[in-house]
Length: 386
Image (tube, rainbow, N blue to C red; front, side):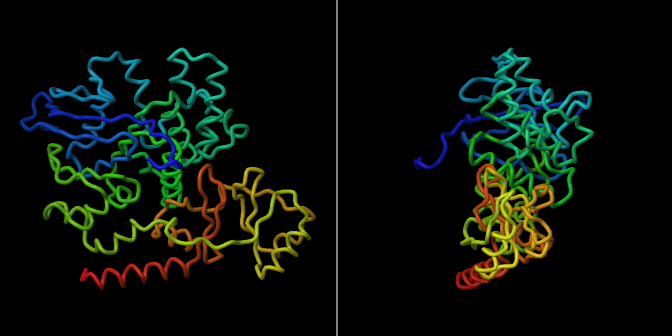
């Protein structure tokens, strides 16, 4: 392990000949699934509707009991553990966040720690830490109710609640399926940022192969009955589909899908003038103009981007104002180049602001840099005869 990587806090999951049969059904919903999910990785379950991916996921935390077979988390058989002990090890995040509408954000997040008997001070600190981790200001959001949040904000709270008891394993069932494409991309980026810091074991069900390619360290492609068609890295699934079923499922244009593997972090970011909220506007404008730029990236006191105003918009203020960060479409450094292009389409700057851990500002990625990189990928693919 490299020294700059955080320690793995996840646990290995092993499924051995796991089967689920429902009364009155001839075929098993899941038939003899054997699989090892390494600690600290994101594994994406994909496959056609009805293939058993959600059933397989839910058997890991015993929301559905297996008919036979063994599931171990960190070497321990889940059926030999009490429910409280298992819930302490497994967080669960579903579409829409599934928040309790009569509870505040803080109480929703605190639910599992409270059930586990944590003291009030520890719970309070955990709520604050998690809201900060998922990019929501604790002072602003902890007292709100779900109805006062956007869909994306609700989903962030759902992720925070899944992490509340600091479990080694997080299960996610179509977590980003009910939001618009821009919010979906931002939530995916947030998950990558969180995982870079925490290194949990995350198992996620999705119907979207592009989402699986973007998020997964490994992808599990299932046929009917949860039969494993291929279990491999996104690179290998795209470059060498196991058979025609996988090839058809991944879809045509797999060379183009390779662009989904190229990350913003692979491109050198450009510097842009920055300003802090409350700075003298005159000084900021003079500094930006001296550098030959007509806009500045406004940062908060923790170095997180809030806005990207043009200088003409700043000149009416004595001091740099604050901005609503929710309205600035940023990219995590692990976002794909496809995401970068999509974000740029909504930007008047022809570029996008890039963030790292805890949403801290890293720089700007330009349209030209992305297209140059794409042309290089195409040249390399052509040279290899793809």
